[in-house]
Image (cartoon, rainbow, N blue to C red; front, side, top):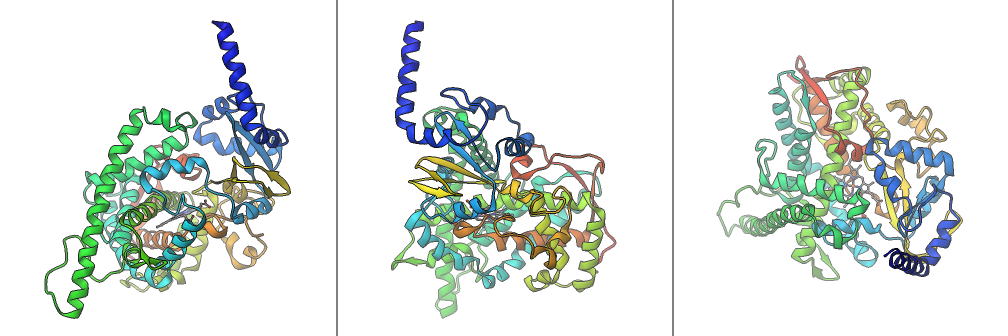
Length: 502
Ligand code: HEM
């Protein structure tokens, strides 16, 4: 029996060395923790807790230098930390998304987050106008309505402590679904909404899989209960998308005939008339003279929801946490709002853009908590990055969190200081260091959209409440979206303000 095992292991090792020899030779030249034969550093990585992940990454960096490697079985992961390597990696057109991103395809097919090459280029060019300033301006009143609903929910808590991430998720989901698809989901007012539940469940399960190397192989994953649960949730989302696309096509037709005076029929239920959505841009986009297919549209809208909701929710959680943690900063923000926003005035993009301290505050929240802490790229051929030659099949991880907390570029990086982004200081910041939305051609397409939602909700909350931490001395290890997901949120108290708006 042991002879069979030895022969099997020897054959497996020979196959592995033969197939992965070039990768192996690249990996051998990069420093990193000691790796076991065949399994590499899997055992060590699976033991890391999300809350200590960034500490470990920082420790590896101190120990092994700016570029180091980990082995996930035969897979080589290389971590990049310098701005120069980051710039080269983010702008290198031959790099694709890491293999792990393809696990998202069950929900987003070949949407922007996964696609590359010609398809990515044409879709990105076609979709970019959907996020231009004129369109985003028209989203402001919709986002404001959802913000008002959030304020009503928080008022109902009557100053008792509340775990706010569920409210924020529902509010951001409602706002993004309505502005991107024209559908009112109402998940904030209806906690049992099956679509909201499906979105929540799907992103939770996809996230769990992506952070568990043991579930990486489809062959294994498809035999788990998690896969069955995920397929059921995704089916609910795809069903919703089918209904929404049909309704929207019908509503656009009706709108056209209403404008031309040939119809008086009311628009379909749940569809707001005459407000352009991201879906409308997709429905009317032509690439090389051809309209996008229903499947392509569905994939891109699901990409917006998937890429936008969790990230913006996490960012808003960090905004509220920072308001509670730094009362002096909160006071400064309220003063600015009182000075700049007329009593009872509707919040427009122009008004929000006037709030300069709010802008600095949001920038610092996005630096301090780096919502997306790492982004990855996969080599597809011989590539030079940072003077080092990589062959195909290597995953490069860019440490966005590490860059944002590097004392070489940020003075006292562990202190929360919004003023560090004031003009004079910002000018000394080298490029490819502050990258909350990544950089290069794949920079987040929804960044201005996310900033609009964050600024709108922050002002609405501050106009109505004083935000306090339930326990001001409680130090939570709140680092990035990844960790937020693994915690049970945190508790805040929303104490109603003597109204500054009325
Ligand atoms: C605070 C909120 C957000 C953060 C921190 C964030 C962060 C990011 C980052 C870091 C990337 C780049 C990943 C890479 O380089 O590989 C990215 C890409 C992307 N984001 Fe966002 N995002 C946010 C909100 C949104 C919103 C609201 C949307 C859409 C409605 C969105 C849609 C996308 C899409 C489609 C991509 C892929 C772009 C491409 O590859 O061309 N994101 N985001």
